[in-house]
Amino acid sequence: MKESLRYLHNAREILKKAPREGHIYTDLKPVRESCATAYLAILEAIDEYLLSRGLTPKELPKSVDGYQKALRKFLAVHNGKLFREFDSLYHALHIAGYYRKDLRDAEALRYYFHAAQQFIEKITK
Image (cartoon, rainbow, N blue to C red):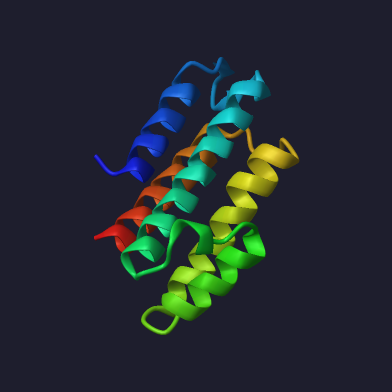
């Protein structure tokens, strides 16, 4: 299994254990942890792609700006939608879900985890 998909699987497992009332998660610690892990899955997928394109591990991006530049350089030429998808997932999972603790709706999380999987599958095929 690709490392990025393993991360995403782990994120889903973390989220399964989070308590909720109806469709709202009541304990944000596991939600934050799962969002962070899902975002790391996306970064792992990008790293896998960049390594397959000849970059060395030392040349991999170190910041979100670096990832955005790499996506523009290596992927946007072929599919500009991927850059927008990454940006959307970054804001949802990393900023809203992990950093600001604003993502607690189960349906929204299900959507973003599905979108993360689609993104990973697109760039690692």
